[in-house]
Length: 400
Image 1 (cartoon, rainbow, N blue to C red):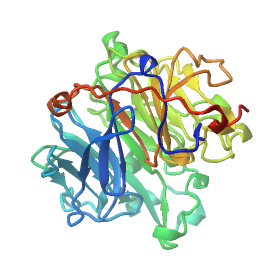
Image 2: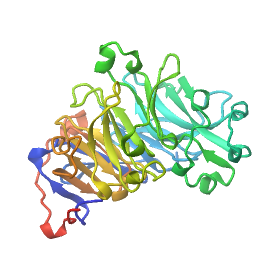
Image 3: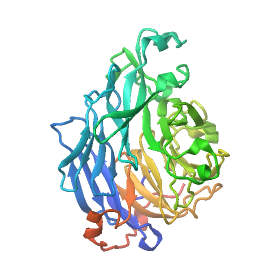
């Protein structure tokens, strides 16, 4: 729930923020805004290449923007990379398939690895021989869809692939997370079993430095929303070597955006998760409430969390990002807002939001903050004028 009613930047305390540019998107357009909400650059995806809207956009260190297009059961999704001048630099479209495997177009997320390869999520039907393992009679006469993770080289060659049906329990699912499992795009004939919405190659981290091979850089973290679980896959063996379902308020519920915090950032090595609270089936206290959880992956203890009761809830998409000054940038998609909170304001046992230092209201599914000098193009823009924004008291939502 946003704090004030106007759109644009509604709260801004420059001295308390990690100031930079924020990327957000809607439909086919991606834009970069400054802290006062002014658009400093914009891209528009090629509608002739792919009809689907953008589901993820990431600014690269060379100034290009990498986007994923496609969602749910799309056959027309794909990955595109645009130069700063909006010309197409690279793409991976559905025709780049693994031989002899039926894959639907990429969807939800895309991740560029340090070696230049790209991690892609593709939907795929569970093969008939694996369907014999399914016990639920509701799934016997329909197509069960899972996900594959592909690593694609710049040449568009698939150099690594992983398929959920070969490594996860086909009888572990939660229909409540996908209420349209026999409607809409499924046409009464299919079910979305995994619904992976996030993929990350693990960065360098202190756990691996200490000898824990589960967290070897390059191992792959995924988030199947319908399984209420985050997994880490060993890239060499392709086996699942770590999982987290949580226990706070009944555990994860339709989570998004799990990622390991990179070295040099406060909380480095911990895993940050946006726990949506998609349904009340586990714990009524989770219904209508979302949480941002920072988890120590070794002990699985929550070391920090953000919550604000029913004032903070997004049943779908959304994201959280740890910033270099220790603040956390949160995108609450259902509330149409992005906001930055101080870490000191919200300890593990905090009950209320004490300080929101930046807020921007406009619809987007996720958002990320980048420093002013992140790439040559943003460096050339120079530091923008930073003007504090304080909303009138009579426009604030009353305290709960």
